[in-house]
Amino acid sequence: LEKLSAETTVIRFAEYLIRFALGAGLALVIWNVLGQETSSVATILGSAGLTLGLAMQGALSNFAGGVLILVTKPFKVGDYIKEDSKGNEGRVTEITIFYTRLTTIDNKEVMVPNGALANTSIVNVTWLPARRIDFSVGISYTSDLLKAKEILKKTAKEIPGILDKEEPVVFVRSLDDSAVTLGCRFYVETEGYWNALWTLNEKTKLNFDAQGIEIPYN
Image (cartoon, rainbow, N blue to C red; front, side, top):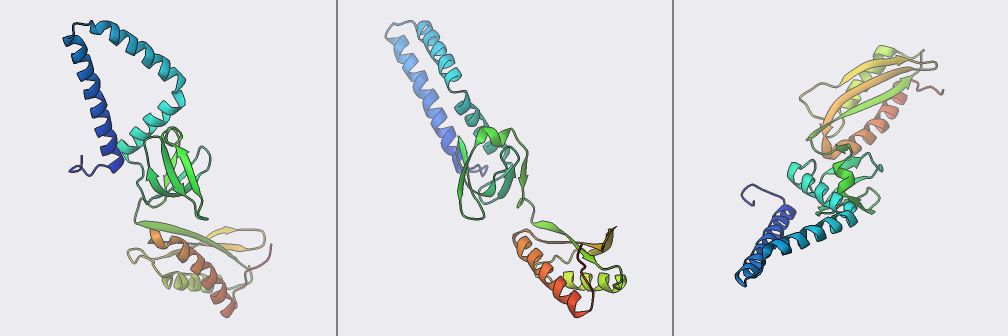
């Protein structure tokens, strides 16, 4: 498992499961060597397992979800994820068999049952190295449209962390009641997404003010 780069939790769980299975098998062999019938023991264990399973459906669901997460790896420790069932989101700090621990932006710890995570949609924000900024800003109908587009494109190119593989795209998104809404799209490094977006907001306002481009009220 280590050669396959498996998660530490998977290795520990596999070790525990194998130890338990071998121990149970050894106990049955010893019981048989002592001259006792193993069929009655198997029947008792089966009945006990069924009763225990019905009483622990929630825990078993979390257990199965944990195994599924550790095998399919929809996220790993360090990823920032959002889940749809309860709207929880945060950076993954630990994945156990029953629960996944998230740390939110405002530094709160959230324990999410693996059963819920395995049966809902998950958005892994940090899975890919690049993330697209989709920015919108409205300008007055009396402002110079082409000049505004040029200023916005130049502003986007100056944002720290922008990826050079694609030029920023600036376009007229919509003609609204009180403004012409411009759109701007470009890619940045995932880790620097929020800093890039906040910088774009600030620089766009400052550059529009300096060039006489009005951002109108509704």
